[in-house]
Image: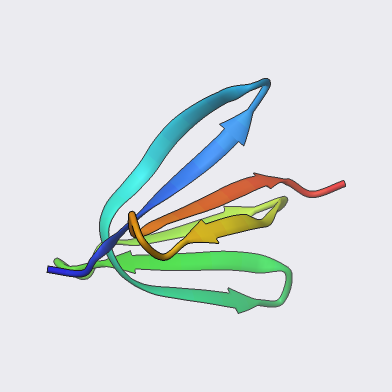
Length: 64
């Protein structure tokens, strides 16, 4: 399967906030992620730092 993990990097530490992510949308300054089971998480104050397509991971960091 090709679902991704969304990971927040804060203070040099990485925390997985959602697994099995099938959708990521940036809308009105928010990042909205949904997983395979339809659970939705809205993240405010974050931006995409980088995406590792090989390991299916999306890294977020606090917006400046």
